[in-house]
Image 1 (cartoon, rainbow, N blue to C red):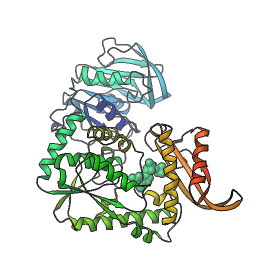
Image 2 (image 1 turned 90 degrees about the vertical axis):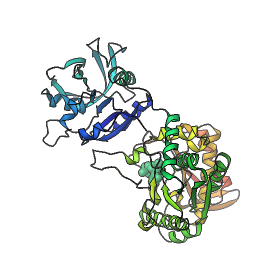
Image 3 (image 1 turned 45 degrees about the vertical axis):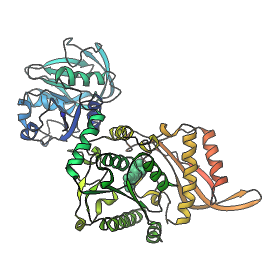
Image 4 (image 1 turned 135 degrees about the vertical axis):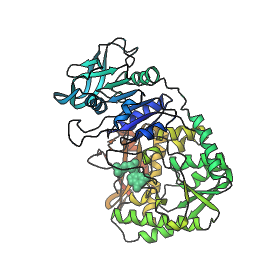
Length: 513
Ligand code: XMP
């Protein structure tokens, strides 16, 4: 079974997940949990070695400020409060937190005053950290000492006897130069964690668990060609081989040769039953006449469920429906009041009719995306598949602007294929986060040879981003853009003009829709 050694109680900081990832990078399994977790629930974690209280936007002195079960501080388990987490700890132990005159946002230098500090072991006396706070600690509670200070605030406190630590800054952000070392110190010096979280262990354990859960039953999985469902399929197939059947629906809204490529990759690497369902006409017919992006999304989602449910009905023996749900999809978030979501909301098969009565099988639900990729590589999936850019569920349905037709999808597929293959050729593909072509509904005049043309405009989109919540347009080399443009106009019938979208997100989104 998995050994969760660290719990991160989520107070709603934008960095909470990053914190859990940084801990996992140290081969220690950290889980993000709701701040309302009870002491009784915490006690069920048998391998628990430490607790981290994350940052968050609230202020401890407000009446509705986030609080935790008081008993958590009495468990004798080491606790690290980060930013709001530290302020909460101070407040609970009788210290004072106030709105600061000089609020700190961004880089700050801290000076470490306790040279015996476990948290700052082997770290230089002065170091740069990332601050993001309006409130600060002005009086440290009894039993605590100040371990580090910035120009404007108490940066770190400790009560070694009770194993309670607090830091005002964010060690998980790369701008905190020694942040990684501080996290390691907390894990290994303070909590005495064992580094047991290894991808190979995860695979062995997941395979055993899938075997045990599925027994002799059958499993179906909707394969999209995306990373998550591909890795889930590979993992389940390693466990139960031909008891898994993958259903691949060709919606007509896929990229060039997508079905063929997916099939080839699996046939080469795995023993897998794959059922290809050709449903292009059904999708094109349903989409006829619709221009509004939300309408198109609904239609595509509905048709997908219809096709998938129809296939599933024919597989009477299948008891399980497998999904590539990953950790960020299920994570309990306190900031927005959500509890764990069981089905990825944008997973098309999430809306399957209840009478199909499947049990969900989600073997990747504890993993972050980068961990999913590592599992994929270790299982032998080709790197092109594991490092593929995200592709939206509704596919080309939202990349053909306004009405979607087969003719437009065919044009777009060719243009997109040229852009993507040029990115690979120039070794740029893996340096950018997402790249694609969008087909505009506008036709413009052009000239080719001696002839006047009147064809569509294609927009190239290429962005860099960490979390897809914000993004900037990639500064692609001009020569490269020039070549892609020439190739698209010369080789794709139906496009006579190419534009490059340099809008950031926000205010733009990544997809045009
Ligand atoms: P936007 O356009 O909102 O996109 O900036 C952010 C990221 O989400 C992807 N995206 C989707 N992914 N189902 C998905 O699985 C969808 O319906 C969907 N819509 C957008 C988009 O490609 C980008 O990576």
